[in-house]
Image (cartoon, rainbow over all chains, first blue to last red):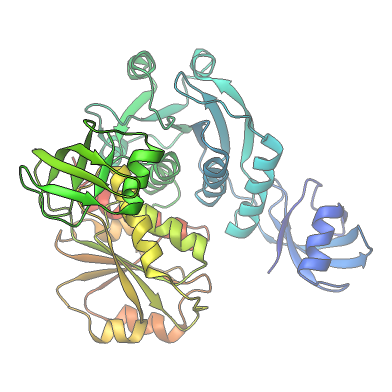
Amino acid sequence: MIRLFINEPLIAGAEIILGAEQAHYLVNVMRQDVGASLALFNGRDGEWRALIVETKKRACRLRAVEQTRRQETPPDLDLIIAAVKRTRLETIVEKAAELGARRVRIVITQHTNAERVRIDRLAAIAIEAAEQTGRLDAPEILEPVKLKALLDGWDPARALLFCDEGGNARPVIEALTSAAPGPWAILIGPEGGFSGEERERLRGLPFVTAATLGPRILRADTAAISAMTLWQAAVGDWRQ
Amino acid sequence: MIRLFINEPLIAGAEIILGAEQAHYLVNVMRQDVGASLALFNGRDGEWRALIVETKKRACRLRAVEQTRRQETPPDLDLIIAAVKRTRLETIVEKAAELGARRVRIVITQHTNAERVRIDRLAAIAIEAAEQTGRLDAPEILEPVKLKALLDGWDPARALLFCDEGGNARPVIEALTSAAPGPWAILIGPEGGFSGEERERLRGLPFVTAATLGPRILRADTAAISAMTLWQAAVGDWRQ
């Protein structure tokens, strides 16, 4: 079943006009025609079965028929990732969508080689991965911010898992045992690691849990996937 | 510190002649010259500090000076992965090296679109990732085999974690609690999933533990990384 993420409200009988790109995908790539069924979701109204009612060259009109899944509220997990090479960043966003992160934020640290980040392209990757993984929302991609400013404005109600490659932190799974299931964020550093100053500040903050990802050096994309996996297994929706 | 995987034995004073490719990397890419230090490992003799004693256009001579790390025996984990698209397979091999798998075996299942697999290229990727992740061996890449033949010849002393996307299996972390730390393998299916016949056989085998990787549909590379992460956290060398 083809799934498309849209922005419009979904109610019975609602008509949705797809833009050029989604229409092209549906009609030309997937070769769907008038009368075909697909699934729609918008992050608010659950999943709906819809029918294609009209196709044109650069547009496509759909009608929402019935709700097939109710909206769920997935665990409240943010992924905060130091800017890394574009291809690895795109992989990380795809995996954040599959592993149930609600938001992905790029952070600039002292050892970050700040490449230009294309938020719109990352958001498109997040939506495509959300469509394929079966979730009912798509991760939001937030504008890059400096680590210092991020921590200065941190909401202390959100716990922060700091994946600390240097030093003597506990394993993630042990650090998360008996962790509260409220809002969390995972922080993954740049290829060069955090600076001594950054590590010291992070380790002193009351909402921070420092943890280590095993004895080998992991690339940023591996570290992000492993940390999200362990968090979902220990605190999130991979339990039971 | 540059790390290189070699095949020759490592003892004090041993002279090692690098082949054209490693010599090119060391001398031209990394711009190292006579007198520079690097680290060598071969999967048997630990890690050694070595010096460059001579460089030529297409060769480079090294001398092993002293052992800097003893050989360790990492957990005995195999990753068995259905043949998927080449780029995803290459990612999976890179991640298997980072996440401590000893062997990677490609398996042909009923729903596999068997692309031609280049074992030599995958082995080179495994070695490069092993050099960067800091381990003292490199994962072996084994020739593709049919699932039926693999299971017919299975050593029952090796437990098999079957990541089963269909049905009612327990979460991995729960399935692995109190698992024995002996030899294990992880089996990840193709994009189209296992056939009903394959699932039934797998679930009936005494050495198989079936488990699920959360409520969302994961691509094969994500499933492989998540399963290796959870295994290392629960049974392998990510504990304490």
